[in-house]
Length: 553
Image 1 (cartoon, rainbow, N blue to C red):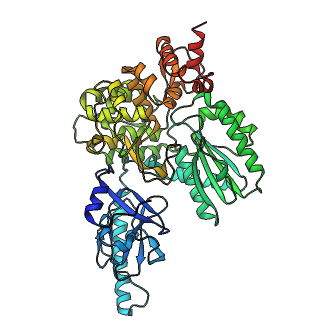
Image 2 (image 1 turned 90 degrees about the vertical axis):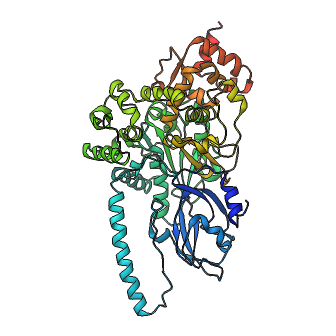
């Protein structure tokens, strides 16, 4: 992997390949081991003299004490670290025991004070002064957090699907699963869309590893090569079963095969030396529960729908905090009418996700209050974007077609031509589009699973939708205006997961599906499936293929 740039011009040149949001900036830093380089967009921090910024294993900026004549001799901003090449030299002269967030502030903070922390051999007078100063700073920080705790930022970072997942009931769910893992090696977590299954799983394995020495957490997609990760001292969270956005019925045999491999591998290990946490959507778990039972994976499941005991007051507080953090200056905005009773109209996703979506975009509220259907509200909203904000619509729909957009890639001209002028965008549009962050997040490759085209330690960053529900709604919008183009050119996983025949009655993920007529299905079969013999064999039991083949008889 290339070293970090060591001067301003090289730093600025490299930063142009990264599409950082307003509050973030490009950073190239060493990891906490000092042997590898990581790149990404994170918020700026001010560091004290004698300290170098590093990335911890979760992608947050921490600092480390530097012991060299070339170390920083004054305070500086984290993205100016190129001024001190010693901070960017691999295996440099750092004091590994002195690690922390800058000035003890979390990564979401933007503290601007100056550190004067030195070694323990200071004179007593200076030490007393430092204690007094430290006490004063602690008071300032406490006041700061008391104020910021009243706000709930609706943006999403690499490790958080939704801000509410740091709430008390989520912490209790994590503690419950960790406790289960003390007496079993396999736990299934399931919940409906928007209840935080993925984030619960990731926090469980981190919490378990932090409280049990010698354990290493790892997050994988079920399609990844799982066997090498199922070893002594590993606790693995595996999600994505049957599909990222919605279940694909044709994945059943693949899931059975992978579960069989997992079962055999776990039987070969000594009990208690390897742990597995499986994340599933509740409707998937209920339909295919027997498959997981046969594989010996259902020892002590946790239903997040009931485990997270949200009270009315807790949800009310989340709603009020979310609306406050996205305050509206329009006097006639319907955000003032929004209350928890309105959420009872739409039960397909969790209440906290509904809150984050509506509070984050007040334009949706009036339509939702009328229809009571958040999916159709969002589909209509994406339809309107086509006319109101062509650049934003183009960027979002390009991500729909591709599934994700890798920063630095050129725009596929074939896709643009297929969808006429509606996706008339360039790579710079992803940098220039102000409101893109309302719907998407930019993640490093290390924080994405099931990206088969490049290794996990790649420097690449990808734009993806903030939540799978937003992707599903955007897919609906594009399909409604371009059904044939979507069926032929959209990533095949999305088509197989989200599209169903009009007469589909199996109820399997149907509440999030678009319905295709026989003409559209026939087009898909003739122009996509029949052109790929391997694909046809893999999905011959999919409802779309069954309908297409049946119509020929």
